[in-house]
Each structure stands twice: as C-alpha cells, then as structure tokens.
Image (cartoon, rainbow, N blue to C red):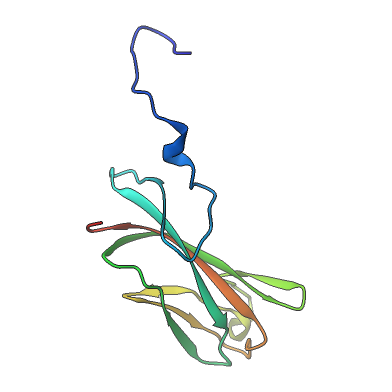
Length: 126
C-alpha cells in the first residue's frame, strides 16, 4: 500500500534475493548510494600469519570502492572478530584491502587460526 498520490516503481523481491548470501562467488547484494551495483564476496583466507604479514588474492576484477571489509578467525571453538584491536598492539590483527589482495598483519603468532574475510564493494565496470 502506498500513501499519498505518488505511484512508485514496483521492485520485485527477486532483485534482493542475494542480500544474505555469503559465497566465495561474487554476489550482487543491492545498490550503493551512488547508484552503482553493490557486491559481496567471501574470501577463504586460510591460516593467519605468525608475527608477519600474509597476502591472499581476493579475485575481484574492476574493484572500485571498498564499502566494507570484516571477517572472523577461529580456532577450536574460539572466534576473533576481524579486524581485532587490542590495547596490547602486538595482540591486534589488522585487515586491509590492497589492490588485488587482502593483507592481514599479525603482531603475534595467530597461525592456529583460520580466517574468512567478507568484502563489500562497487566496481568500475561489470
């Protein structure tokens, strides 16, 4: 039902059916504020590094604007939300999108943890 006398365009539910789909395949999840299509992709990062940086290719072509990046690292029933800030800097785990890679620098040994990273982004072209 609509209020007033302005008719709005019908948008079928199907357009938004992927909004809660998490996949290693690129998913269209909506439209960003600038009108560009908004995408989501999950990256299986593998194990976290031991007091070093680790880069893993995200595989997104024509990435324009990174809207959101977060993830989780888990080990034996324990989860760390990523990025993870800690008052002891060496315990923090950062999360960056650099060109074609996801980079995770760890200040301490986190190699027991396996990480999954979620990026949401727009593209220059489809």
